[in-house]
Structure formats: structure tokens, C-alpha cells
Length: 245
Image (cartoon, rainbow, N blue to C red; front, side, top):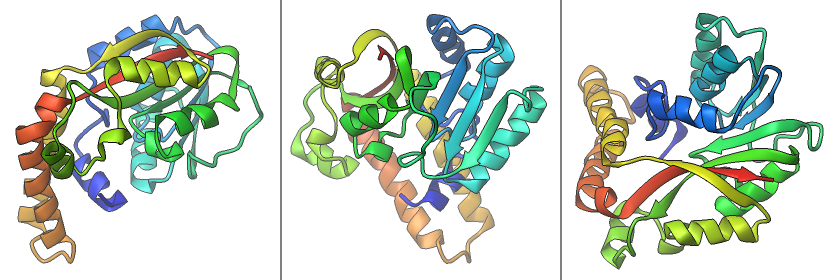
């Protein structure tokens, strides 16, 4: 899926993953954020978690993303929440972003472990920016139950891209972190994230029938909807895992 397709599909979303405002606040409480907590959000998208926490708890820091569209929305949200003086957004590849080593109390990557070619690689690159004893927050998929080959084919995800929930915990442990908490999506929050994209994409296709990307976007919409209903809802889970570095 191209970056443009993401920007179109999620244009009406504030949170670019299967989590709700309620669970976002729960996650902030779990992390025990205090005024002055320094937070780095890699692949921050529209920065909803980052800016909400800055407003609610007084944290500050940096959000990094490659999308100009999403970063514009993030800066607008920071202005709306009156935290523009607490947060800074940088257009860059989150997988290669460099900053002062071990300088952040929280380093997060929520739903974008592709920046490190998977969970293990992402945890490795997050470590270099996390202070000793700080919190790493990683949002990723896991297999609810072992998927059959046809599910992996339809979802266009190799089986070894994800592990079971317990297997995910083992990967986290092997990467040198301790899993201390988690907030998981459920069927309802998945539905709201995914199904809302169907409406957005359908409307965009109605309004832009002559766009050069319209045929590919229609194919993407049809396939994404079918694969989610047939396999994704039953086999693929998602959650934010709270780790001690």
C-alpha cells in the first residue's frame, strides 16, 4: 500500500490504528507520565497520542514521520490543543532518525514496525534513543490463532511476520525488554478503524473517478474489505505493548 493510499484511506481518522480515545487515555495513565516527560514518537502519523498526552500530562518531545499530509494534521492538532510549544514534528524516515542517544523517557512506535523491518528490528533501533529504565511503547499485530496459508495469502502477510501473543512476548524478552503492560484492540475497535476506511475510500473514488490512481485504489479497497471480513477479523489481533528498557 503506497503512502498516498494511506493518506487517502486515513484522511478522516484522527487515530491511525485500531485504538480508541478511551484506550489512548488508559495507556497514558499506565505509563504514569508526568510534566516534563520527554517523549519521542516514531512514525507518529497525525500525532494524536503524542499531542493528547502533551495536553493532558504536560509531556513534551518530538514526533517523526515521512508524510507531509499527516504532519500538517499533527501540527494543526497541536495548535488546537495549545501544545505547539511542547511538541515538535520532523519530516524524516523514522527508521533512520538520529538524536542524542538515550535521551528520551518514552520512545513509541505505534503500528509502524515496518521502520525496523519487523518487531525485533524496531525494538533495537528504539533502544538507542531510550534512557536506561525508560518505557518503550510498540504497537503491532499478532496472530490470534495460527492462520492457514490462504489467510496469509489473502492478507498479504507472511506467517512469520507476526507471532502469537505469547510468541510476541518472547520476541520482546529476547530483544532485552520486559513486558510490563499492554492495551489490546478488540473486534469492535478493529471494525471502527478498518470499516471507516471503506467509507472514506468509497467517497474519494466517487469524487475522483478520473484520478490515475483510481483503478488501483478501487482494487485495494475491494481486496482489503474482502480479506478483513474473511480472515483478518478472526486471525489478526493488535495491541500496544508497554516495555521497560
